[in-house]
Image (cartoon, rainbow, N blue to C red; front, side, top):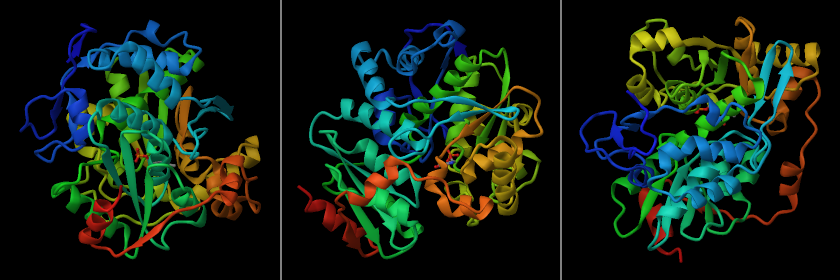
Length: 425
Ligand SMILES: *Cc1c(COP(=O)(O)O)cnc(C)c1O
């Protein structure tokens, strides 16, 4: 499956196999394949170690890694500038006890979703030439703010963010409704599922609207999420290492698997889940492992039926998957214990999502990399529950207090959304 012709045209197939191979820009702008499947690369480029091994500059390394993926569709100069602008924050690797924590939360909205959203938006902006394209996103937390922030202020795109009124935290809501150029926030009087149903209804029947979506199944989020895996190995200089990934929709893990299939020496992945443990159960051989989602303290991982599972299964046949990926799951109680134990032993403050992965890292052999997906200051209540005191707030959050907001209430029906979007100009 690996090809060594770097300049070969990369194309994408559907996991369901019923569409012709398309180029990256088509897969990016369509999101879901027309047969309902997820786009996967037809072949994988071999990414040689010299591409990343002695890297000292993240965006420059990113450009070298993505060149075989994108060079035939995007001029080098534009790719380099997209990555310079999108990945303009630090990505430190920190020793915490025996583990190596890769902090992915130094982007503007303090979660790893900034990598995908900021890069994907600039790639879309490059390919959209005529009328502006409206990006729809239904959110119950981190994705919405990363997308609103990452897609705002780009001339060819605008964004409609839908969230269930009263069902996101105060901090999350403030991050969603801050006024941004080209972004509308809609507080829907319904549930997250209503928001998602409204988005789906309009994507299926756009009428005269030009629409796309920015959810975690888009290949435009997958490619940039491979990059920090390389960065961890470049920093750590290991010949091989285990990587522990806090999982929800399995987008992050799928990106890591893609990097390893292109040659990154990951010894083993640990898929660290909260009580939503369908995937670990699947790995353990259960049939019908997936079900309704359960609410937990690591709420960005509360996913019952992970949308990237279909893609992961396509990339790694089941027997190989069980060799390369170990599942684990962690209750809320153990999440709190993990925050407390790590803090007491090392002084490091982990957010609840990172704490789930740190709990799973304890059983592995060195070196172990733990992906840290959110800043603890985003989850002050949970950290306080574990430690007795909340994390210090950070400028990216305190600054929000004084910023102007814009939000519109919306009935939970596709027509209400359609009407609002049609009158947007
Ligand atoms: C989205 C998210 C996750 C889960 O990532 P997936 O790619 O959906 O598996 C984990 N932690 C945080 C903080 C997130 O926002």
